[in-house]
Amino acid sequence: MREQILAALSQYGSPVLFAVVTVASIGVPLPVSLLLIVTGSLVAQGVMPMWWAMALASAGAVLGDQIGYAIGRWGGAALVSRFAGMLGGPERITKAEAHARRWEGPGVFFTRWLVTPLGSLVNFTSGIAEYPWLRFLFWDVLGEVLGAVLYIALGWIFSDRVTELDAALGDFSWMILALLAAAVLGWMLWRYLRGKRK
Image 1 (cartoon, rainbow, N blue to C red):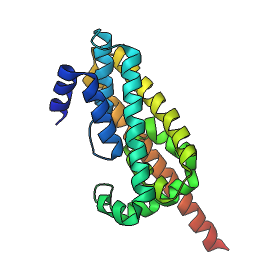
Image 2: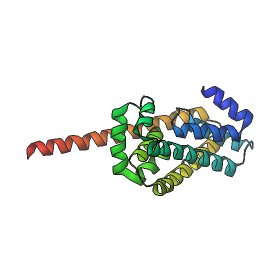
Image 3: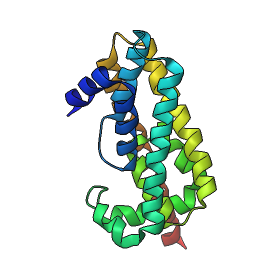
Image 4: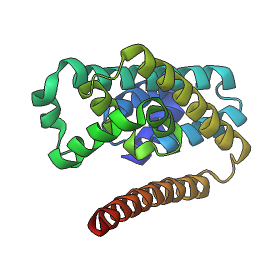
């Protein structure tokens, strides 16, 4: 599927960029990081203007995130449970909802560009947790613009090493996720052991 998306991007340009980023932000697993990096490479080749690519990628991502938030907020738990399998199961959604309440705005911001595998899950759970929409929108726009600028600029700078850059960023993203999981587990273990001593 990656090859088809990249071929469509090369052939049709901006409409494909906008559509794929929007659909991926709703929760469909598509190679968005690679798409943005390749877009940066196309910018370096003069195929697409930098500002236009960044604006389209940001707008598509924000639109998709808002749809995900709306599904969680107004679709209710029944509708979200249909997506549960895609998002890791009901237990993961319940845990993510608790995290959405705890992390709030910074959680939305960092899952737009640093810990991107959690992005669509945070959209749904922010809606379920009824996190205020204007605050969600603020942190969402801030994070998505930063993410689009970062990934497209990296693709522009390293336009001759797109595949290697994508692999490195993917590994980095999962490493950050693993470190966060380890920190949370360590904190939970510390609380558990502390409670046992009392």
